[in-house]
Amino acid sequence: MSFLRNAACLCVAVGIALCVVTTSIHGQVAEPPQAVVEKYCFLDGQGANFGASNPNAKAAFDLLINEDEAGYDTSVIVKSYRIGKVIAGKESANVEVIYAVLGTLGGGFHAKRSTHPETVTFHLTLIGNSWKIDGLRIRPHITQAWILSKLRHSLAADEKAGKHDSPLKAANAEISQW
Image 1 (cartoon, rainbow, N blue to C red):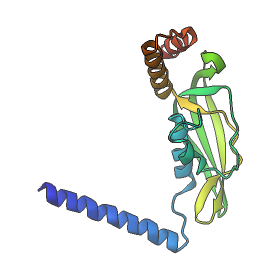
Image 2: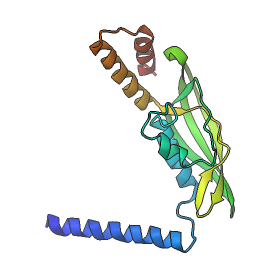
Image 3: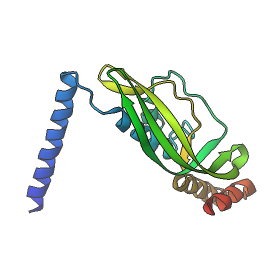
């Protein structure tokens, strides 16, 4: 029975792959602009723009037209985000994202609580058969869960090395309460 289930899953995967290849060959757009923005927001939330060493950094950068990504000393910590209004034309689109902001994390692990909604409009341009985010200049928007995981991992590494980083501990304690 599991062999048949695996064979069925393989057939579905091959079928999806053929649809994607066929779509690319025939010049149709592979993903709608809101799917590109959703992917970018997910990767950003997982720290793709927090530091160049993040394994998601290249995947997020590949969704952008920008040749250079701006660097920021402060990141926005969000509880969640959702796609809002989408306006798409033949070669350009605007996708609104509404973030539920909890606060910020600055240099030296300075955490500052500031809960509010933040609306960002992503501008996209159709390049070939792919939508690309154009002219994006926003601070990283990382999820609370991701930054807490990163902080706890750093604290554990510091403790193992015999270090006691007070700002790191304070940021972890502060953000944990949000």
